[in-house]
Amino acid sequence: MNKHWDKKHGTILMDLIKELDKNQVRYFILRNYEGLPETNQSKDVDIIVEPSKVKVANTILTSIYKQHGLSHLYMIRFTDVYCWHGMDIEQHLSIHIDIIGGYRVKGCEVFTFDELYEHTSEYKGFKVVDPLYEGVMVFVYKQFGYKTPKLKEEYKQVISKTNQLYPEFASILQRILGDKLAQVELEFIVQGDYDKLLSKHKELTQQLRHYALRKAPLSCLIHTMKFYALKLCRLVLCRHRYVKSFSVMAPDGAGKTTFLNSLVEEMAFYFTKDTNCGHIYHFRPTILPNLGEIGEKVGIMEQDTNYSVPHRAKPVGIMSSFTRITYYWVDYILGWFIVTTKDILRDRFTIFDRYAYDLIVDPGRTRLNLPIWIRKKFVKFMPEPRLSFYIKVDPEEIYRRKQELQLDEIKRQVSDYEKLVSTNKRILPIDGNRPVQEMINDAIKMILDQFTIKLK
Image 1 (cartoon, rainbow, N blue to C red):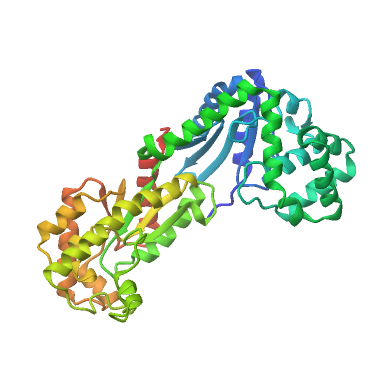
Image 2 (image 1 turned 30 degrees about the horizontal axis):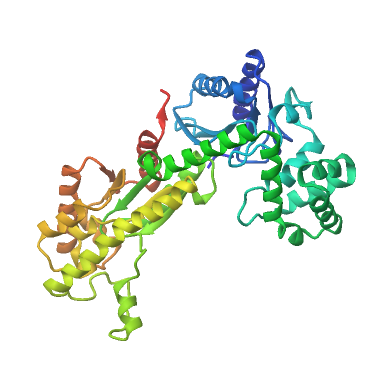
């Protein structure tokens, strides 16, 4: 995998800076700018721009990405924060730049853009926040609004160093927190007791909200309402726009797990994240526990955990099968909403290793003894991923790799999967008879085409 930041990324960044200057857009870069444009200590670059020029800055950045031949663009918005991911498959390149209109937390603005801009300096041809306000912003914005804030060691060092070098640090805290809380916080900083400092985060958040409200009550109210309106839109009203979901299916032995693990790693590269760019769920959301687990808890059976033999138990009766599939249906309906909501909040993919389609193709795995038309009806009324990959491998090759199923059963499953592919446009075949990287290249192109904007 290519390294995250190189000369190409630096050129894109500096071309953006030149255009911002040319269009008289005031801006500055937040922390971790040391080394830019040649190297980057972080996975992205945060650029604060004057709020009235956010649209201009976004248009400029999109144009710069196009000029540099990037093939895809992914943007996710969090109120005033616009996260722009530029990607190109041929160059195997990804870049993440955030355009931020001012600096608000859930609608509350502690420091206006003009206040912050007064505390910037020049660094290698672009504007950066000065060391004093770098420390102030780390102290404030790594705690303000968090349920359980955490401070990395580097953040603790920045705060301690700022307090030691700049007497103004204490006066700023007194202004925004009040004398009493500021004095307590400063004592913890001097003592290096950041556990006690973080224990006061609720009081700190309350004081900062009061400060922002007193400072600009109407603006604070409007932007707070805007924050929650956008959150309601993402999670409820327009959630289908933000759910990024796909599944992977194939008979056991087709190489599904190897493919999926490699795919998630490659996705992390293009979306410039760590390996947590997507959460993998197995077969179903599992909001409801396994039936065997329930049976074991109530003492009517011992749970069978020998998952290496998928058809180890015989199908159950008609009524029990109907109960089972209804139980799974409830789990898919409720579970889908719950797990996708969690993933929307974290801007990550909802990924399934196998999905409800198994109820049609491989009923023996779940011990179902129901006509296929009933199983299809249940699956029809379950949520469907926006994209599904079917790993297509010759039955003989699957049997050679893994003898968990008889060859005839593998052939039957392959035939049923191909029928699904022919009737469902969301299910896309991937030739699994090739090297894994070739399969990944095909899948990444399909994912980017589905979930991002094409630039060329």
